Length: 297
Image (tube, rainbow, N blue to C red; front, side):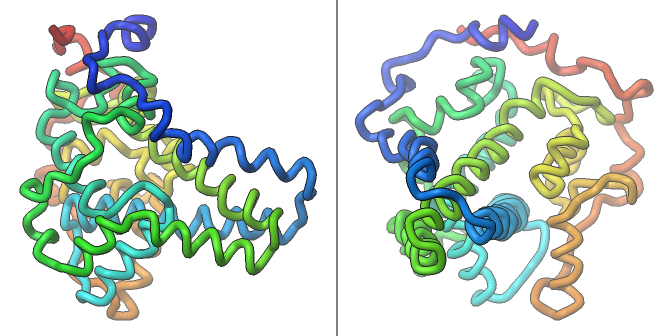
């Protein structure tokens, strides 16, 4: 089964890797090696960890739970901050990110799905990002947020927020601060986010009989601040918490609760009891969905 997931899909012309235009993406992974010459200080590592934490929260809570699923409400100013700081993760603009994510949920693990592992593990992990097919933003898929000019601006100039983050790291830590604080944390953030598209559709346990291959993973939940409870999320997408039960650690939700207590966010949506109890899989490990999906033509 795993081998077929890795190799079963033949790429169309617009799904091939764009090597020239993808050079910046690959450089993000290579530039941390420059620390061999500059050395790495405790300050660089602290900067790396801090940026990873901050940007992971703004991706998971902002780009995902807010812009993609409207799982809570906030002010227009905070909405802009979610888009700005989330944009510092160098995962393009909030409108691009959320529009593609909504498409993923509409066609999850079907032939139309943008990044299903049924088209290959590496495709779902990063191949779809470095091809031409999904470069543009479908504003019609996200009309609720595309009406804000400041969000459209950040989406169009999506390189501006990560550039600001890179400049900050250089000013704080010099070249080593740039290599480790910015580029290493960015690369780590990439693959933590990408692993939700790939690994949590292959490995883990299933609590709910969704029509896709989503799975729950404690390890991925710890790395991605709660996103690893992916089967929970596909079962009830509108929830601000991915960990449905107290023992399912969801760091982003805890931060949202703190922001709610400060009046910064409001109306955090949670799954009703009926949703928690419906479509349960008895042993939590059934491959419902995986075996039902046919190989793409």
